[in-house]
Every structure is written in structure tokens, then in C-alpha cells.
Amino acid sequence: MTPEHAPSSGPAPAGQGMSRLNPAALPVSDAARVLTRLGGKPVTEAMLRADIDAGAPANADGSVNLVHYAAWLVKEMSAGGD
Image (cartoon, rainbow, N blue to C red; front, side):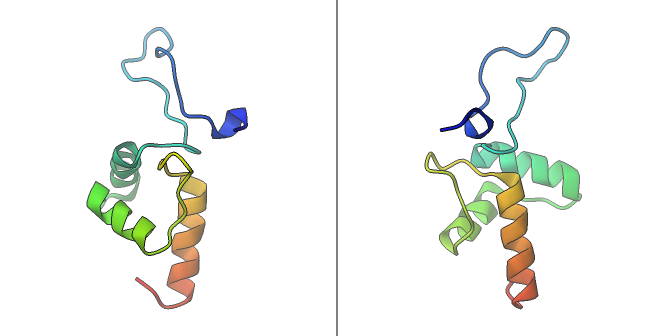
């Protein structure tokens, strides 16, 4: 696994309350939280897991790469999928 695909680890930098999130390897729960905050509509873990079951890409450890997931969503929308 290359460093850019490795999960985030370690303590947060001084002055920050949360550890850093790695958009290339987010646990499903964190991905749902980030997508909800960025998109303005609720995204649940169940929704992401349903997408993964339907073919959305996931890393070998089950985490989600937000760029790959977004590309999959665009492909699905262009193919007429929901």
C-alpha cells in the first residue's frame, strides 16, 4: 500500500480536535459524515454500503476513496442509474 492510500493515523496536529482524515481511505462512517457535510443532504452508512454492494469501489480494507466513489457516482448517473 502506498502512503497516499494508507489510512490516516496518529494524533491530530496541535490545536485541532479531530485527527486528520485521508480522503483516499475513509472508513464508511467517516465518509458518510463528510459527504453529508459537503453535500447538504444526509448520507448514511447504509446508503454507502448499498452503493458498495451495487459495485461502488472500496479499498481492500473496506474504506472508501472519495475520488473513486465520486467517479463511480458520475458513471452511474450518466448510465441512468440512481
